Figure: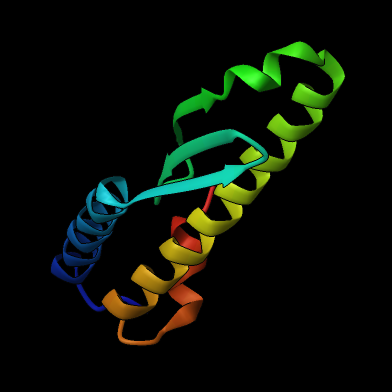
Length: 99
């Protein structure tokens, strides 16, 4: 598949660049008074909780799950979009950069 080491090194360099670009993407999603921020690599950066959410523990837990899942879903869409743009539409390469 690869004809020489320089091709492998070039792909490794591009993968590192892509990962750095995904780190720079910040996604913010708000669900029921809970805001979750994550990056394009699907890492949670911050969680902000409205004080009104603190009165009901089970509702807070449910809303946290919803907010986190929504933020991670948006992050995944943004990262696949970025990867598609960087790879020139070769979506098959996107799997190389997922967890």
